[in-house]
Image (cartoon, rainbow, N blue to C red; front, side, top):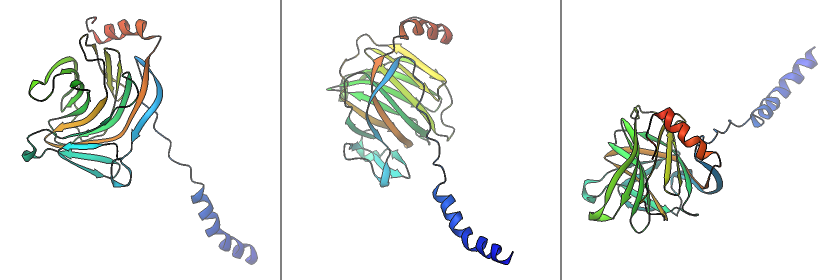
Amino acid sequence: MTRILILIFVLSPALLVDAQEKKPEPRKKPDAKLWMAKRGELLWEEKFEDGKWSKEWNKYKGNFVVEGDAVKSNELAADGHHPAMSRKLGGDNNVIIQFSFKSDGSPWMGFALDDKEHVARLIINPDQFKIVKMSGTGPTTKGSDVDSKRVKLNDGNWHTVVWEIVGKEMVATIDDKDMVIGKADDMTPTRSRCELINGGQFAWWKDVKVWKAEEDDKWPSRRPQLLALLKKKAY
């Protein structure tokens, strides 16, 4: 009995270390549900690892700081412009964009698509989110809402948004439940650059992913069903 107890005492630390080494990795959170498009090639993702963003990003205005696995942004009065950090979108013009965000006092934040001029934006306010068709640049910048949805988003929690853009149609959902949907017939077809944008302080982003997209074969029949469920007019 004494020998058995000694053996257990000697082996226990080794068994404990072995069990710790074989501890299963946390289950990876699945990507958000899609409605209009199918995911193609993953063009890029930004995890904000090692306390920095990847070299593809170009900070234009504002104060962007990486904390943990997320980037935090706030507006600087001396800039005379809202915070913006951009990079090439990659791939073609049909894309699926997914990211997690947290509104932390910022009056608005979002994700922008640009080319030689502004093209479209997904804007997140404390009490709503919307997709916006854009045009112009600088003093000629204009925007018109395509669709909006009232939902409380300044609760201090992280939320996940997925934005599908195929041709001139756009669908965006937050946490797989709240949706905006619409079409902008005169939207610029080329989307070559994207931006993280916000106003005031503070706004947070993490886990940004961009895929190539193609229209789901079921979308033509799914569209009217969604519009009826959301009680929106056909566009």
